[in-house]
Length: 133
Image (cartoon, rainbow, N blue to C red; front, side, top):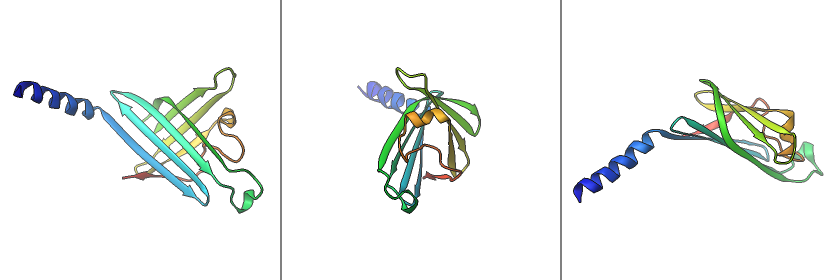
């Protein structure tokens, strides 16, 4: 019985050694960006969502929310690329995540407009999403 319990605990601990999740957030006026990067056994998944309420410059526009997630490719020590294809469309959204020790910046391709309508967009506009400790 003790061996079985020890083996179960060892298995749980060893699987968590290969898993890591980092969260990043940016609140810019009435726009909120959230980014989650998860690495499990060498596979990286990126998930990002945005919730935008119109700010003063966007008066009269509608609030919006959008998200995109999927398996990503690590192209450099500080860069991850997520390519997401919209089902039934030719559009591809490509997010380039540039990591720093304190945060992340996101660039998006034109195809991401099909995933985030209105004032919503995934690009961080040169601002850094702060890494949550």
